[in-house]
Amino acid sequence: MSVVWNATTYDGERRRLVHCFDEFYGTAAELVARFCPNEPAILDLGAGTGILSAAIVERVPTARLHLLDASAEMLHQAARRLANWQPHITVQSLSEALPGGPFDAIVSALAIHHLDDADKRALYGRIFAALSPGGLFINAEQVAGRSARVQNLIEAVHIDRARALGSSEDEIEGAIQRMRYDRCATVSDQVDWLSDIGFEDAECLFRSFRFAVFAGWKPGLLAS
Image 1 (cartoon, rainbow, N blue to C red):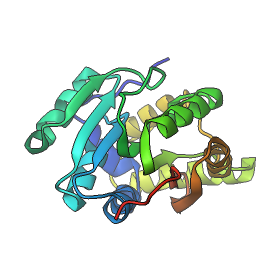
Image 2 (image 1 turned 120 degrees about the horizontal axis):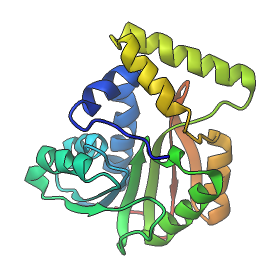
Image 3 (image 1 turned 180 degrees about the horizontal axis):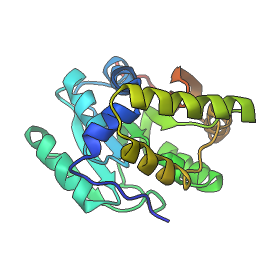
């Protein structure tokens, strides 16, 4: 089943449902700013309305953006938001072949957890192939707990903090229904998969309960 969002209300819901919104997206943007060359080519997977790409160009205004998402409606919103950067737009699912690249960074936010574990690993392999030597993959993601106790904790904190940030009960119920179809994996498993594929220094660099940012580098010359 596909996960359906309303493109016109998506940004406001993200603000209320991701309690660590600024640091979550900001960590991914900071990594691009620190490790990518001037005028980096960036591929944003599951780009949605362009929230992550917008955070990146605040830090790296010379970025060349390529946005990919299965929803044309979401990408329409993203193209309007990022009009000054004239992003290249691709409407397709994450299970299809990626644009050729190579890319200095491939990023994603709150998208890959919709795939099952085998498809996640296959996508990570395609990402590795599409990166330039020394290129960076960053996934700002919703992750699973390693035990029932931890999973119950992160789910409870998510709902409590969403309410505190102004989510209505209808909005919370909608989020709960959508999350029934999520296929989240643990951070540790995903970092291990990246290492097995060949990424260097794969690491979780930010986490707040169910929200984490992890990254890995393709071997090769680091960007100056």
